[in-house]
Image (cartoon, rainbow, N blue to C red):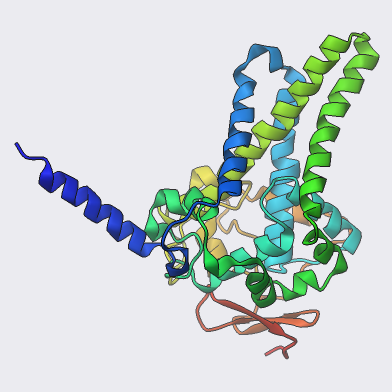
Length: 336
């Protein structure tokens, strides 16, 4: 029996999937620094299976970190506050939340916002950075580890994140890899806190080292990997599997599992139906813990009802082009 037809079909399938990858990401070229970083942090997280590195404190810190860095940093700050301007809060609070988002190692706030706004402008179309039609793996992780000339830093920031980098705080994060140093310092703080607390309590250097590494591995690397995959699943899973409350012009879905794991981000069809809304859960059972957190934030405020045409935040108008997913960021525009 000849295997040639099967091999040909596999090759043809690969070719079709690659053709669906954003044009400026072709031909596929690995971004070695991204791939190496992701691989290294995954390998470090696997050390959690070594008994010597286990502690109940480390486990608790990891799960608390899912909320602190994932929900507060990424979901609330990077996504709802910065990318969509769904709420406003004092700058000291916004910047503090942004630092938490940085520690999730998902680029700088300005770059994260730029990529996300481009996704909404071209959701599921050829220029969508993490287009799910190119395959689950591309939407989940491939778009991060392969070069996309459409996402070059200066072009992306100048087109989609002008309002972000206008703030000197975010502009400084783009310079001289300052955001990387913040991440590394946060890792050192996790280790040092575990080390010195154990040293003060037990006065045993070896046990202090063990506890410091436990807090580092669980509180940083395990937590980071979990936040990564939950965030990436929004790009992949919730554009492939789930149910729809709204007939949007993209393939966005509400996925119960991801909705619960992500504290509300997985109600993705609801989000694409009204990106400006700070509330993603629409049905009574669509739990949105991020929204509940927003309601509890001190001095936070929600802008007025979302418009289907133009809304204005400061000096930046974010236009909707008639489709519920499209955004164009332009210098100050009048509200419609």
